[in-house]
Structure formats: C-alpha cells, structure tokens
Image (cartoon, rainbow, N blue to C red; front, top):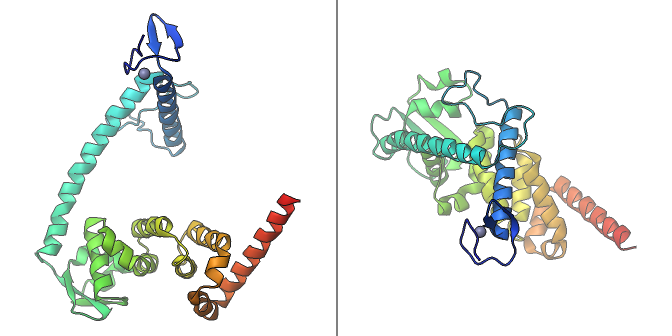
Length: 275
Ligand SMILES: [Zn+2]
C-alpha cells in the first residue's frame, strides 16, 4: 500500500477518506502549508493590503471570519505569488539598465568624491538625491563629497544604490561603513541589508565592533545592539580576556558599563534558576 500523493510505501495510515490514503509526511506537509498561507493572508489583512476594487492586484484572502479554505486557497495564493515574482523579475531587468548606465558611465552628470583615498566617481544626480536631505541643494552642484567613506567604501555604496545588492565579499569588507552611511543618509533598505549580514556573521572576534557600531547609529532597531550585547554576555570569558576588549573599554566606557551590568544580571539569573 502506498501514499496516494507521493507514492512512498505507507507505514502509518492517515484517515483514509474516499479510498485515498495519505502518508504522515504528506499529511503534516499539507497541514503546515495551509496554516502558513492562512497566517500570511491574516497578516496581510492586518496590514491593510486588500484591493477594495477586487482588481487584478487583489491579495488572495479568506473571507472575513472564515476558517481556512484548504488547498484551493493555497493554489490561488501560489499562482498570485508566481505572478508577483514574474513582475518583480521584470522590474529587476528594467532597473538593471540604470546599473549598466553607472558601470558604463553613460549620461552621468555629477561626481561623487570619497572622503579619502581615491578619485571621484561619476554618477547620476537623480539617484544621489536620496543622499541629500534637501534634494534641491544637490542640483546646482557638479560634485559632492561623502566625507565618511574612503574610495572603496564609496564604490560599494554606489554599487548598492544602483543595483540594490552587493557581492558578499564587498559586503563583508565594508559592512560597518555601509551601515553607518545607511544611518546617516537614512537608507533603510541598505540598513537592513547590513544588519542581516552582521547578525549572520556575529562571533567572538567581531561582537564588540558590532555593539559599538549599533550604538552609534541613531536609526537602527534595537535588535542588533541587543543581540550583540547578549552574545558578548554569553561569551564573556572569551571576549573579556581578548586584547581588543581593553581598547574597546577605553573608547566605550558607557558600553563597558552596560556589558558588566548585563553579565552580572545573567549570573544572578543563572543562580536563581539553579537554586
Ligand atoms: Zn505521501
């Protein structure tokens, strides 16, 4: 006897209905998939997204107060998601022309100078207006300077602004500088991009630096700083005796106080839990 859906031999039979026999994996997979789509749709309802005209862009949602519509809803959701993916791919190809114009220096109309270490980079005014809190200020100028960044960091920033992404090696190398730039020039997408990289690469050798950077950014969510602080507390023995801690403590006395307090709270909680 085998599963009516995936055809694996059946060891555990799930409620045979109308002669269909379903294996445990298909049963759980179907349930999880339906739950996931229902949850997604419920979130979308919460975040407003229903097209009131019921047009082509309408989000597939279960009727208000209804329970799950099962697989019929999942299939409709998948079709809509596929259409959205194709639309996004077309947008990416369209925006790729702008990236090519930057790489080939076509119709560039402004020079962007790094703070240190290299020549100015030709770019397009229209895109760079997002780096200027007052776009009108940028218009009459032939060049602007991004004083916080060196040449390589500026090159990485521009590459991200034109393409919306960055090669992993460049991201790893310039992540801190880019996060700071994202904070200074209020570029939330770049900020999230860098935050994700920092969270993924958090380890004993970079945790202090990540804590320091996250503390200096005014527009960051608290999660990066909290995560870095918790990581340091959990690995206190290793980090406190590292050569970089001494230098960090001298430069960041207020953060050192926060680390010590968080460590003592952690020790106290552990004692309470074990008693
Ligand atoms: Zn199956």
